[in-house]
Length: 530
Picture 1 (spheres, one colour):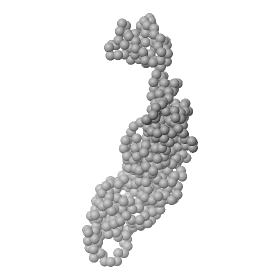
Picture 2: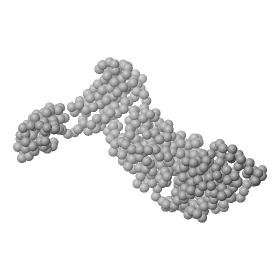
Picture 3: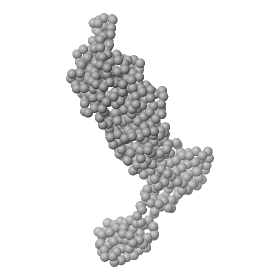
Picture 4: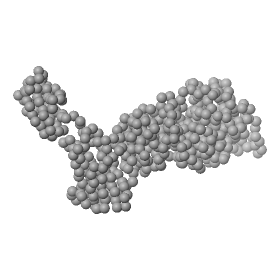
């Protein structure tokens, strides 16, 4: 109602013929409803604009003498915040790099991005065709009752009834400052800058159009390869716990970040992606036993169809696997290049040669699969919901979590008891350290499915001990048949005991304090009577 009334008054004022104006924009209806209430832009070397302008007289404000020019480098994206009065506002930006005050189509760097009362983190990319030097930048907000089609272009100069326009200065250089990888927000989801990619913003063939955080740090780079993608937005999730592992069948460890990217226009052909990550995240994968990652060259990428900000891949089906085609570093951190991608969604970096996600359903319903150490051996058991004698179970063992070898085979008829069907096996010689087990299922058609991986740890010490609270009993846990001696500090033998593998209780109530325990002539520890 208010907009209709203002339109009537406006038409009465200017008449029916709404002719184009010189390149000084006008909005006689004013900008009370459609003001740019906040505009900021961060550039190189700490240069920045913070403009809480609000509605200006005549719905146009020239801030070229108010704020110093922001330094921008062509071939790089920069971020800032935009806020307007109405949720039906759409903002476009031009940089008059030929300084003719006309703001031609080839000077547009933002195209009808929807902005409203909630601040939006946006980005603009400076095409390599732009000339160096100081130029006028125009920011124009226009009201559209319905979201405009991509082909609808906001005019930088013509009269728009409900709009506001602001001009600033930028200085385009060819000397970029240092760039950094975004650290995100550990344990949280962080939105990236929104940016326009396509023919309207003259960057559909530009390389490495960056998605940024609010400090211009890099999250991802898109090589659109000629595709118009419309408004591109993203989210970065940083894992804040132990390294995550995908469910079976891949059981792959994956990096402590994942990025979701969405576009308003789907690509018609393949594009390329640059994925930025912290060096510390790579080191965490390398240090994770079983990750299969020894350097950046072992990284692969999965793209799946998860929505924004997933914390893990536990509820996602396996996606599409891509292998790296390029690697690089930036200010001590890293990036990896992927080529020939189709569609956008969520991206993960990981080790392994298959896509990560919640794998195929097991051939029979697995209720449980457990592994636990016992007397220097490993007991394994599993339960299934129903019998299928045509299923073959293969127990597999690994010492790195990645390369598995079979150690036993059982069939569906080898269960130990019914209701539920229970299976068991003892790995009598597992070795020591961290040991990984998984269960492989195979049917008559040679279909294969895997369980989740179970890890056990077996001490490589020959023996360990503990004392009770009274200090009169010593418990010795032996991992093999051993010979134990209790000696004084002088070396005098006090007691000799032959011990079988297992747990033994020794009465030491009559012994003085300050004794040593030796096992097979190797000192285990000194114990002091309580």
